Length: 201
Image (cartoon, rainbow, N blue to C red; front, side):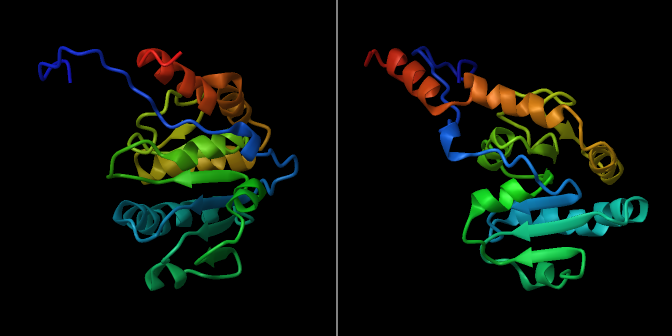
């Protein structure tokens, strides 16, 4: 905005969450890869179709015990068709928090769209290991390899998932959880900064 000539003060207020709403499941399924998100949004549909076609075959070939669970409203029939013994496709889940808590590795394969991915922040708060793309991580003050793993090709994405499947004790999930719960994304922190900007405090 400054480059466009804005001469008024600018304040950026990313999404904040109440971490009390996101409990940590101490016994998740470490071999369960999962995705949750609205499936009437084209970037999610494109990302999941890409994942099934390019990534999941690599993962299953090298780690046959891997499982996959998907959840999202208005799940396309083309995605439901992937349902199998190792793939669970849910059109709707009654408890998003329980669904996220049960999983071991959250995937967010996005190649288009804009805005901050709130589900990634929620996953970080619940101590999930997260694999995403550069676009998926946009707007989140995290570091690749420390707070989440980024893969922009099928090989990179699959390699990151396999790394987490083979070593569930990785510190990636702990680092991201600490970042969220230490205040970086906590709702009251953003509220306070916004109030100070508008001089409400």
